Length: 478
Image (tube, rainbow, N blue to C red; front, side, top):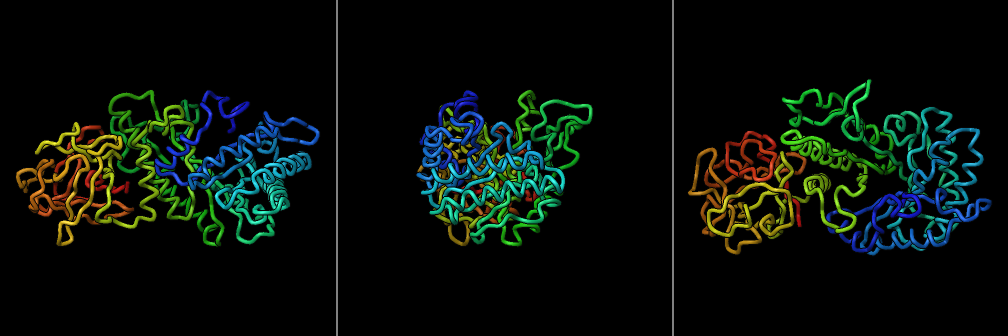
């Protein structure tokens, strides 16, 4: 809702209930709506009156989300920069007046929504010192006062206030007090995360540094090493999120990570493109998981990279699976017999499947982008003795097995009629961060994707378990 004119201003189609339905179906439980008001929709500059038609449209989009039980964060986004670029003492009076006028109107219009709607004061206020922080706190105070003054559910609605530049380090160093709120325990702090910038957003090499294409342990390139991330990887991320946990979460103040994203390097080809895709999926997976385990609520910044805004088709299955798995494993209930799962390899973030939808005995198992096919969906059923059989939903009476009772490394995983043999039974044991090793009962060897393959079609086989990511699996409940 930040585009010039309306939500179609940058070429996207209008938001529909069907699109929101697809977002919910894909595993998301909350949506942040970046919204402009002053930039295109003021019909009286003296009173700062917002066009009633625009207020009605924003209310309609919020309702689409609430219809699906989705939580919504509605903000004043960049909006021409009237607040974001003016956290200064000389602009303080004028900005506070506009902040008050706009939020009184927005809050009044949206007053009847229940707790599914959260308001956010601003977007990324440009603040880097104590003076700017003091000015920003006055803007947040005006926001809180304006919303609370409208009464009804707004008297206790949850409100989000942004740290300086929504930067973790600046927020930790400068945001040492919160505005006063007559409602108890109803304020959230907001930060954003695009670290390292050279991997996430940088779109061209600069004199001070080059773009990164590969991020994270196990995803660095040996053939293109100058593009490997040299900072901002797992240990740095852990430290940043711990700062927010210590400063806010541990004191009962929730933290919203209102934006995070890493762009795809579509100029790459071949193995470099494949490695970048897997590395990017790992970044999404790790950021999502670590945010949640530190009490930080992550909101993906998406401009259509995952779900096509026109067709509602999922465009990037690998990225979606990585995000959903990162979220699920933060509060994973474990494997539940009788449930249906997508089984995703930890190394490639691709789904276990039976090649070509084959239903004949000895159809080989491999990995592929998750396309919601029944050949990629497995019912986990008890096989007695604490073991399981993995039954594909496209082939009644058949199961995943080790072909010809193989006991050797490299034995092929395939499809066969279920007969109750130990080569058709599996032990599923937790490893770390919500992943599992899947061990064949007959051979005692682990299911893996051969040769650490990151590509579609990588074959599933068995090997001695050595703890590598290609031998670990996520179970995403369907």
